[in-house]
Length: 264
Image (cartoon, rainbow, N blue to C red; front, side, top):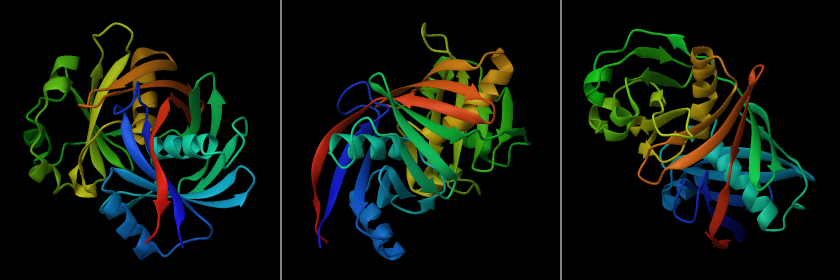
């Protein structure tokens, strides 16, 4: 059998920016071991697997090259874009994705795609041994969500210039580490980077799920609910964010760079 697949740059300002994800459309649920092998072969930060339930409604799972994850923003954005752009769903149709993190939605939003995700709460925590040493940074705040550590540092410049010890970070018993600061660049509210070597990704280019924690965190600090955020990876990506109760609206743009058939 063969399966349609796409490679999509998500949260992208143009081709070859943002975060690339592979999207594979399946006629029925696939063997988990096979999905792990496909994700490893794709060798992108995430590969999304979609199985149709009904018109505009899909089961969705996400795999890094090393592990399955419970929540991924950029591969959800890529999935919506692939379904609409590939003609698998009419472009105006809102989408529902059934995932390990509940039902997530995607809707067109004036040239952007809006995702509706659960907010992730962060609680203050003592930094574990090795965390700050691995980042080579001083922390203004350290917290932990159910997925990641969140570290606030003094400035955008510090976030931009970080050179972490990935071997040391790999030993931490979490999905990843978010490092953030308030932005100094006009037009951005806050900036971040995301490191997840223990999940098979030294640095993720743009991480939608991390912004489910960053949005309520910065909302509490800055006293506002709407943000423009920038993830300062080498590829870089921009997100428009809104906190609405216990949900985060993430808006981003996406660009298809590859389309083909998976034949293995």
